[in-house]
Length: 580
Image (cartoon, rainbow, N blue to C red):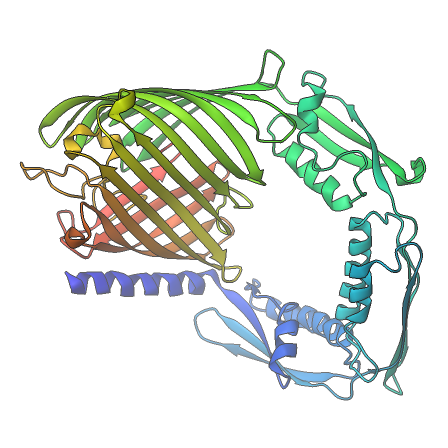
């Protein structure tokens, strides 16, 4: 079986290489320059799809040469020359290499730099002036020059100097003599504050509620960055359309700049129907109803129904905002779930309520008190349980686009407990955490990791705890090489009954073959267990395909278990549409 696993890895490597080869690419390279300059020039010579027909490579080479000339001049090399050579690897891949002769660079002969105005003595500005990137005798780097200019203006505007500008910003160049002179004079202008905020449109929503999306208040120092962040908050609220946050700098009243927030109202009620398939739960139908403005008080009702082959769920969440901080709200929840899985069968009814706080952008802390009634059968043992569970959950999601989660991270961590003293069936304390991290290594490659951790401290037999509170391994988001919830400690009849602890993690590597399609290789390891001495790490490897569709990623994976494999030796894992 080890050879099968190695074969799967080798096959995956071939697939990843072939995917790039089949796409057809034109690459560019530079030689004859220092590595740091080569890295800078590479930014204007990205990999491009192979022009069709191949005769188009000449046009692409000429266009790349023009970009290279502009880049070299920006870095001070006005007399650079080069020759270009082209290589075909025989598999539809072409590389154009520019052999450079840089010649004599332009150097800074004189530098005049200063600031004036009310903000000229601002400490961060003085530090920035003291770290100007060019000095007398340096090679003229206009990229660093322009970057510094932008940072200086952004610094002043972020501190309220809305009219900061350059009285003089000039570079005098003598190409024949290879020298340059820089003249920069910055005027900070007066310092401004945010003035009164006026809301226009979306009258159905209370003004105090809309104001929660703003990251500034009247009297704060004026900052375009805070206006942009406020506009993003309003756009991401799923409540407003045509969002514009504008400031009338020229209409300032003294040092106060008035602000207008223009909003259009989206329909407050949404209805979604969908169908999907998940290897874990089978085919499913989903229904979702949302009302974002119940009673015209910005209270939110979310109702979801999922009818899957192995699970039937109906749940509702009701939230009503309080206070001035975005994300501060009361929460009420209700859930009924019927599951007919290979590992167990259960019926669960749960209601709860509590409070949610915002800890920052896309970060929440939620405290709930839940009542849970369960009837279940695990490992041939049928039982009923009742729990009153106070819980505390932290969640953060820092993906720029949740429908295309290829750069960022998410984390959910939860602790909860129960006691017979307040009417629960058992005394327990439970911790769980689930995290995902992904980063782009290049435009075509994405590296990802994921982990699930859990611990259940219980006085007495695990049979007193419903399966929803135990830990199982196996399935698409755990160990895809093993069946859903099929791994963990065994009951007396040899069936899986779940464990007190969980440790599962994995790594994956994606290679994009087009804008929305990628192939992926992955490796996972871990298991559910009752004690460290009993821990047996299962492992799987696999390869798959991802389509980043407009409604979220669609996954097709082939996964092979490396440890204790069971029929089938290769599992097909697939999900599409509305799935858990």
